Image (cartoon, rainbow over all chains, first blue to last red; front, side, top):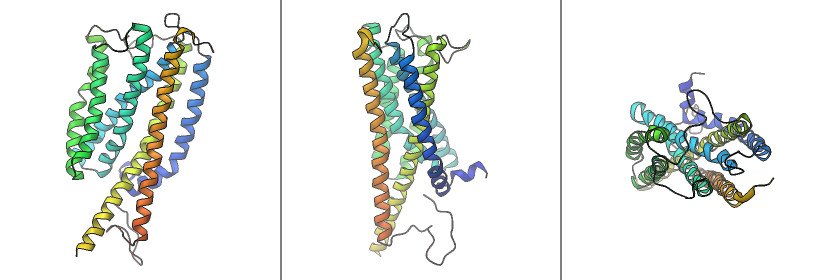
Amino acid sequence: MPLIDLANPTRFLKLSSRILPWFAAATLIVFALGLWLIASAPDDYQHGAAVKIMFIHVPAAWLSMGCWTVMTIAALGTLVWRHPLADVAARAAAPLGAAFTAMCLITGMLWGRPMWGAYWVWDGRLTSVLVLFLMYLGVLALWRTVEDPTRAARAAAVLTLVGAINLPIIKFSVDWWSTLHQPAAVLRLGGPTIHPSLLTPLLVMALAFLLLFITLHLAAMRNEIMRRRVRTMLMLQAEAAGR
Amino acid sequence: MNLGPYASFILGAYGAAALIVTAMVAWVLIDHRRQARALTDLEARGVTRRSEPRPGQATTEART
């Protein structure tokens, strides 16, 4: 089956209903494995047991940027190919991205207080992630504010593309500016600098978070398609009643 | 498992993460139930989309 055929909403609903239970089951299994690995992971020689916060903070941070990347690709689909599923994908990803960014900020603050002596500092990394969170809220507000779905989709797509400028700023903020935040320790040239005993649970939790995102994104996309069908049917009903 | 002097921060972080994950799952499930109920109600009232096959018509792929 050509890949483009999967972008048909009806076919997407059929396929996603078949694969969703498998993704949900895989998410639960990998989360259970990750939490077991975290429980048996050693303390860090500098940060002690507080290193356990890293196992949820880092995957949440990766997904906060990953969700915006998905929305950016979807925005191109909306603006260039005008595909109906592209806006559905973006709209389903935005609340999830906002939630993962909130998780990243909260767990980061709870890491910062014992490690840096402050919940918050206005440095490049923390501020750029806060800007990302505000952009998620802005896009969500835009979709709710503009009544015409086609106009809302285009406006949100443009805002998403403009907001994508923030992604490299977040990534390289720790290299460009003086910051309390530690530099990249996993996704870096030269390989990870974390000991395998801590890297393994981190990567397993990252996989668990990724599976969670895929599961919730597929389910939210299905909901969005259903919402649009309800809207269409309500409009047809109103049209028929007006005749 | 001894969490040491940072126990409250570690438990707070995991509690917040669990709360956010629960909220995301609940949002998806509640939204699904709401949309499915709305679709069922409309179909029960005989409302169909233009692209949906009417009785006796050949099946075609539907749009959103």
